[in-house]
Length: 140
Image (cartoon, rainbow, N blue to C red; front, side):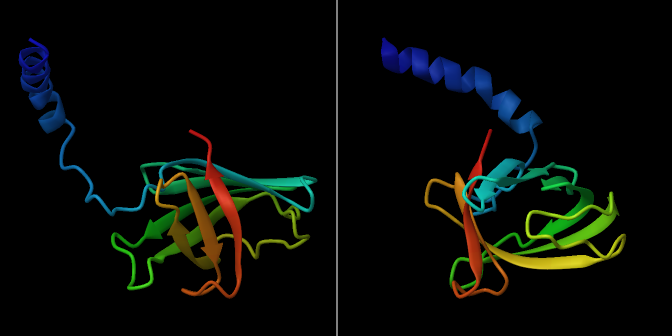
């Protein structure tokens, strides 16, 4: 009986799955959503809200910025996805580290690596674990 009910549910859900469009590959980066991490003993928090329209709203300390982003569809041989963010607008305030963004058009390239559960990520300057921060946790 359970098997029949399960099969019926699958048949009813099939049109919904087709209407959703092409699904992302199993190893596609699960970046969409809100990510956050605290630094300096919890005294400052950075939050990134990655949207499906390839924009991101980021807050860090007093800084608020809106950016566009491009992320590689597949990781490199070491599991890093290349992420390039381009500043669209920002409020000219300092981030958690005391730095200021240069302004619209500035590009920031990072390399991210996800946990096996895809609910945490490391953010690195290069496709290497030598200069990274995190883990950054997915909030939703």
